[in-house]
Image (tube, rainbow, N blue to C red; front, side, top):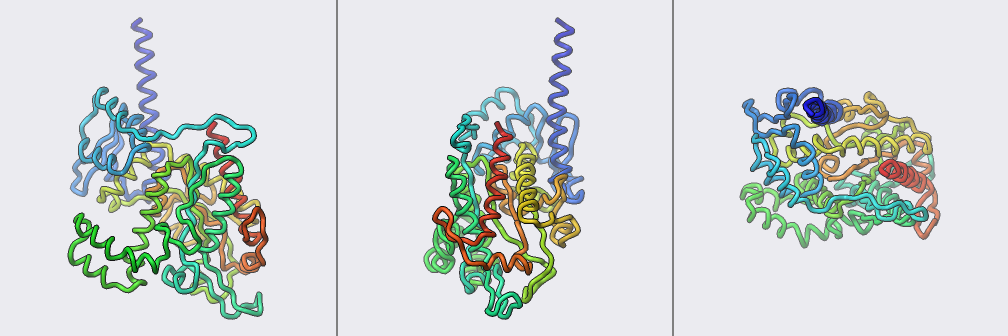
Length: 426
């Protein structure tokens, strides 16, 4: 009996050490941007500690708490996460306290039974078509458009709005996923809509003042900040407030939907080709997942909560897997090379290269706060001379959706990646 008990204790210790080890691997591979968290996040044999700028421990996770806290962070609201962060601190939870957290778990995602005719039956997929500017006026505010007054490719001018490309791709993908049984949610309902299901111009007229008034009443804005924002023009207001506020709304809607996976659709440009007055010969494909936290990030409660979720759960590993399938499809079926760490300044300045080619950890707002495995796709460079020709071809109609052939090809890449990914989950 003593020998069996000894073996059991060793097994438990190894199991707990593996949990700490997995967290440390996630920390090293995805979360610790160029060593900036080395003095802030401390790993011990049986615990993980977060320190403040004074070197004091302010939050601790002990090895026996990891499974429960991972479940809690993955299946609860931000408000509940915030309360736990305040109440727990550095104390060690007893078994009774750990068990009591189960009461607060909201909606655990379960894997549906296999359906041969509808392989995605029971799965929930969120799709975020990036941006909203669907005409030159709004697209100039977002700075997400290409306009070549004279082009060597065509006799007339070329106009491309990334928002429109994103939205059309999302709708093609939505139809393909639904045909296979999935329940699909889009963060915006029309091509020129924000995630508030209205245009930016309409939101400014009907919601700007009410929103700022509410934030002031909740003490989330100071009087001076309120007065500053209320008087900004639409361009400055977008960059100083609305952009992040609207992205937060997208994430809130996705998290409320509680998907098995999230697809964030974008199209890229060659940063070295600014101000984008002529085509480029460069073209790369890439995908982003969460990570790349810095020391200043952990000064903020919001970022600390999302850091803990990404550290303790398996979401980053799953996001890397989904993103790997996606970028491989982009490269193979679109004939575009995968980006390397040296191929763009924003990659080596703001991201970490994962072990999967073309997949990078980057602390983008949606990558940080969406609570599900995700892929943030940048399929191609819109300003590439060959892509420009393909993206401006006449649209075709497949399954009732008008879009050019290139967008169908991109949607197919996402679709097959999702199928492949969810197949690995069974």
